[in-house]
Image (tube, one colour):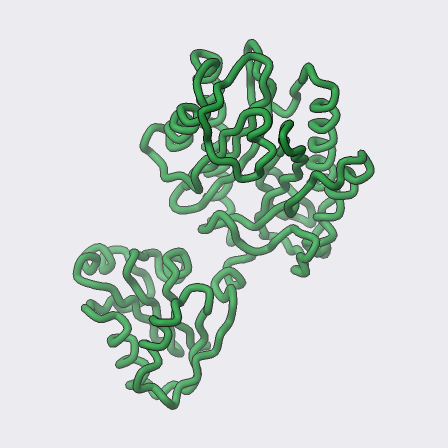
Length: 340
């Protein structure tokens, strides 16, 4: 298959290197990484299985290669190309059909190799250690700090204070702000007896981790799964979320679809009378990107196979009151889900 890529992680997967200005082209048995002079030295040191071409105009260089090889069809992911870039690429190539293939690289990357699973496991372990570091900060001086400061401190802990990049901007939300699944930090201050939701992850050798915990803020707070809240309503919701999380992981099997695994978690919360407050999908794939295939949602048609890595993250969100989410990454191995 002939294909052309522009997404950084898609390119990295193909040749072990990428930059913010690169094109990867695969035509038959020939492969090229096209980039500009800022990256040429590094690219030649790191690229595997492809020839590095330096060019001031990447699209022009790609056109010349396409024309010289006489190909008739090239696959591309329309999600990764602007209209302008695609039209520029097509100039003077009237005989080539550019065939759209949405999520082309994600499809290729959906089943992880053993070395990728090892990297994802290490990322998850480092992420868990970072949660413990953040808990130490919260116990020491977190009470009285506003969400914006807590958010800043969480980024420091997650990165192991500069050693690792983050998978995404952390979510640190108190009480009613946690009812927004992707809450932004505010000036709300943390107090004893509050509910605190933290969703965060880091990258290890470019592979992402993703974890969420919702905790009770009291003496000796921790990010463990067992939490005791003073509010019966919050405790009921927390117990439902934890049960949905645990059952989905326990009962997930290869051969199920993403929708069937989503249903395992959703049914628990619906039977607990809070189904209307579970407003997002149960999970998503994780790899070089924080959101990859497969999607564990009501519309998830992908059949789950060994080697797939995804999150299980049910939640309950009651506007104006509180939000609860519990999330872990799992890998499918020997037909079952194993927490990373």
